[in-house]
Length: 482
Ligand code: NAD
Image (cartoon, rainbow, N blue to C red):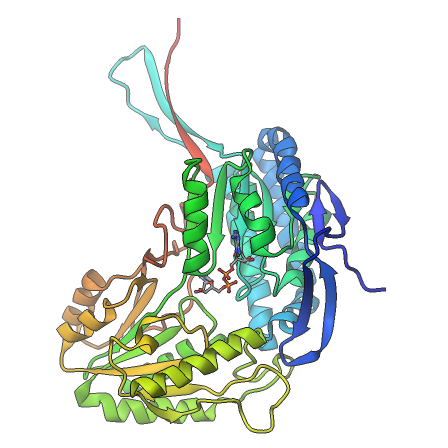
């Protein structure tokens, strides 16, 4: 019999009790569902928060070295199951198996890195004006934190939220995307096996509209960390605003890659295709606008199209360059945007539809448009598929103006060999992450990550040396002994 117990509340795996049926399909072979189960209802969402609240004091009081040891153990367990976790990820999300293996091993690395926050999230001792008063700060956990994650990096994203929250002594309720509940369940099972006590980590799988507001507005929730679309993130910001609790929302992007005439054009073309089609374009940091100086536009365009045409497409288990889109709905949206771009007057250079002879599966061709203008919808709205728009500009200033001419501000890159231009770009571009001669995608876990403008609440960056700041109160203490 198939396992349909996807809710983990206070240390017990139970069935959801709502009428929402969650069906997981392999996006490469969607005809046969992998599993179907009922999502959580509102009472279960509230019960998960209650369980996290009940477990909170004990977990916060545990010696930091003991919390750290549990998280190290979780990292070891993830690594020990790398192959089967990667297979689960590819079967439900669709990405090439080598990418899944990379993501799973990154999850282990994330747990190891942030386990140290248990001991390293320290305060400061500060010189006092009064010799009889000791002045210092301490960091304390927020309490109960709700973690909400999307489907596109379905083990890495929950891992960086969980690891930091748990290391710093918080208890959590994790709500993963309903597209990718299997890998979330396996991650929570591994945490329980590693010794995370009952109630410290709770998993609620359910429709955002059914359980979402209960997970963010329950009076015991002390913080919310969300990654997903700007629409959902803005909704959560509004619903949580009245309670004034800390909130972190990392959201969508419309990321530019600028190419100047003095750039290494082969490297720029490689980065443009890697950034736009890697992961089937389903990265918040995906390159969607290639902003190129008119002097090198023709040569760069040829190099980009050549690379797009060379990409292999297929089921993730065959490890192609590009797997399918995650769902029928996502792929329909991709195809709609392609029609919109054509109607707006952009010129389709390659791709633009489903690959021939691949009727089953949510496959789509790598797609490149030229003649894109900055005010077109294809240059303004997040597509979340392998669709790249080329925008020609006359000089550096126009390139920066176009790069900044969107509501989003997540990541941006420039290809140039001129230090003055690259320095000016890093200063002027409106993006939370800026690369010089690199892809817009990809990040290192010891570096902070997060956007600006409509891409982020800009309250705290995730990852990096100071990720713990979001998950902790800084208390300022003046102690005068009698
Ligand atoms: P989404 O906004 O549809 O869903 C994200 C999560 O929010 C899911 O778990 C969903 O169930 C939940 N949710 C939906 N309604 C809710 C509500 N009312 N209350 C609480 N939770 C609710 O996003 P998606 O389609 O899963 O992911 C793709 C999006 O995520 C893209 O826009 C992408 O750019 C963005 N993303 C951003 C980053 C980043 O770090 N900036 C990283 C990855 C993905």
